[in-house]
Amino acid sequence: MNKFKRSFGGILCAALGAAAVSSSAALGTVSVYADNPTVQTIYTADPAPMVWNDTFYLYTGHDADNATGYEMSDWRCYSTTDMKNWVDHGAVLSYTDFEWAEPDSCWAAQCIERNGKFYYYVTLSSKEAGGVRAIGVAVSDSPTGPFKDAIGKPLCGPNWSYIDPTVFIDDDGQAYLYFGNPDLYYVKLKDNMIETDGKVQKSLMNAEKFGVSRDGKSSSYEEGPWIYKRNGLYYMVYAGSGVPETIDYSISDSPTSNWQYKGQIMNTCPTSFTIHPGIIEYKGHAYFTYHTGNLKGGGGFTRSASIEEFTFEEDGSIPKIKATKAGPDQIESFNPYLKNEAETICWEEGVETKRGENGESNGIYVTDAGKGDYIKVAGVDFSENATSFTTSASATGSEGTIEIRLDARDGELVGTVNIPKCEAEDAWQTLTCDISGASGVHDLYFCFDTSETSGTVHFDWWRFNDASNESERTEGSDKPAENEGLQTTTAEKEESQTTTDVPIIPIVIAAVCVLTAIVVVTVVIIAKNKKSKTK
Image 1: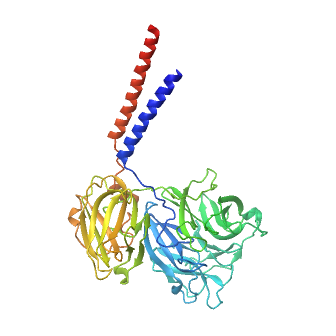
Image 2: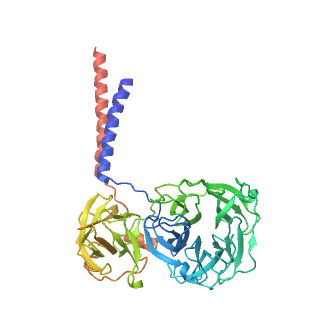
Image 3: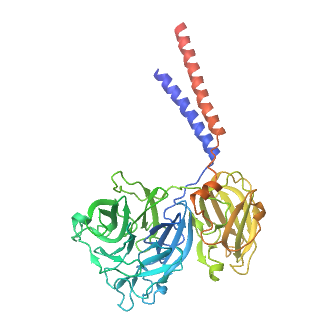
């Protein structure tokens, strides 16, 4: 019996191994790249999420390259509908939009929508107050700006403690603004969202309400508050424990008092002494945003936004969340048959994004793409078969190419776009190439090359074509509207996309191999048993 187990186990393992190899070959070898941090083109600190019109927006600060202190010149915006591929909307607000602000003082901020307008509450240093911090407010008709200073002066402050605003509109319509380091402050806002309603109040700070301090303060609370309401509970999530920071939270049945400390959400970050939290729910999923120094060249002053998915416990408590390289799962596949922005990126290496000098006629585009650089777009659903690819691109310094590959930088090559040398990077050309072998769901890689090392590729928009839109392959080169490349509703996505087709035949073959092995082993054992009995 023991011999039978060993023999059967060996053959079965071999059969299962063959099955795994067959299935792997059928499904294709996929190179795994980390998708945290969310943005790789720049350093993006203090992420603040917002959900509006079926789209997840992520607003961030912008740490300067090689910064040795907080050098932050503007705020950026990114959006997604699938939690993997992010459209870069560029800088939507800067200290230059506030006459009273000092340069490079764009600290943490948060945006919120009310009655069709978007209000951006920001931290800045006041010129008149000699650099003392203050809370400003900007307004826009669009979540992607442009934003403008709403009142021409600080909304709250100047006061050294007034930093890191978070804003919230309760179910009864009352809006609240919270902020502060090393204490938590709050103030009511009027319906117009640009005036305070009453005086700024300081929360009662003690260990029962905000945790035990490890450095002798009245509580663990440090800075970076984030207010959130769910199922009648108010959550105050914040950076705690001094420096380096952890993320902790308290809950209450009131938006302004009765806080009760509940515990730690995230431990300290090895690469950044600050973290900065945000929590939001989107399409049935709960997400936690934070920053690290994990991007190449990153650290305490060069931080990058990251995201994790989590599940609230049954009693409403928040579990301990670990920082990961993978980030959240993709929740919907990506449609390649729309006119997509080139700056729609899951992961990249080597490229930059830029706003065209002609303003709205160019919008944001990808630039500085050279030899070996690439862009990954995750979970692209080609459905039956893509026939061609159309793009608006240019090349300066030399001729350029965009190789279109599946599942890895060196994955299957399905098409190549050849780009003639241009006199200027905004001399956009609408170019088309044939596509062969792109069907089903794959990660898509745009791999750039130039005929000379000094050459650079610039990439504006792209679209795959199939039989249904083949006639459009060379029509028009106008810049699509921002966010056109992402579906705006789940219903539209479901209508235009199909589910992933898993290759069945190789799996069936593998299963047959396993069953055959079992039958062979059984026959051998029976024969051996009969032979031993005749002896």
